[in-house]
Image 1: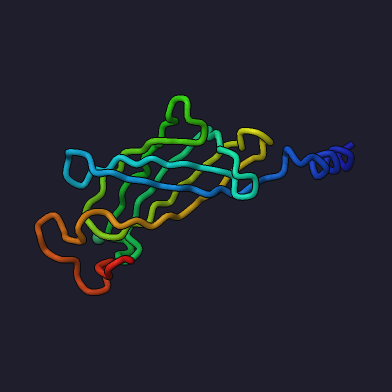
Image 2 (image 1 turned 90 degrees about the vertical axis):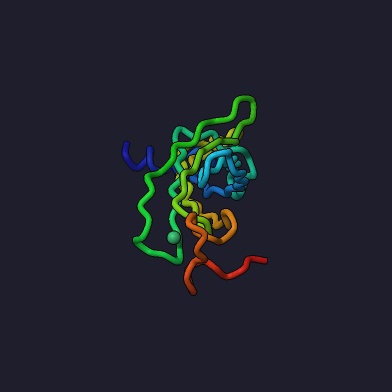
Length: 145
Ligand SMILES: [Cu+2]
């Protein structure tokens, strides 16, 4: 009974998991250090939009371990655009941030389970701290191409 069930699961492509890919575009809001981000999530193999039960974005500075502890922002689905989500990020300084996008959902067509964490790095702002001071050496200040 259990063995038969196991085989059925393995044989069903619909139940096979898939990794996620994410495209992120952020624009500044009127408020200092607050960005509005659009996140498009697709299945890496299928390219299908991912319909998420939950999607969160945790921002951290790779060059500044332990300095920031920003709670994850919950992303909301954008109406009429499957696989597209919106999240508001309240960061603590300008510079390079790594966005850890944690998604749990399924691809729109083949219903493959997608439970993954995708890291996307983005440069936010001018590379200057809110007080106008430049980030110290080795702290995300390297110019991006
Ligand atoms: Cu920092």
